Figure 1: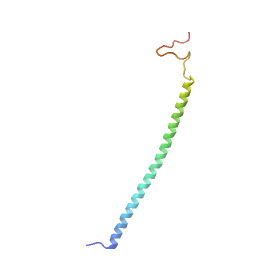
Figure 2: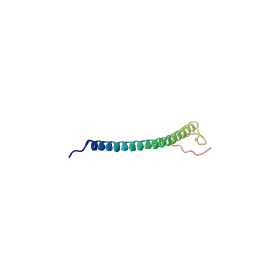
Figure 3: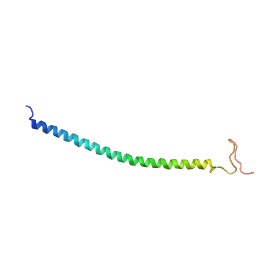
Figure 4: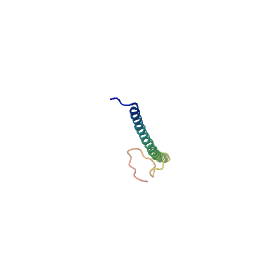
Length: 84
């Protein structure tokens, strides 16, 4: 027994409706995940910038002798014994 034309149209419309709803759910999930990803990226970028600025400050301080011991630099292997 063959299906009537109306039944075929109903089946096709139902399948198209289910497919459309499925695509909308997937699109919503993608948009939601993208938003979460943006927030995570902003946090990671802020942390990277903080670390980069700390490193730059450290390098600047090292270049200007900010961590030098009293008495100045000593050759490798020589033990610092204080002022004479």
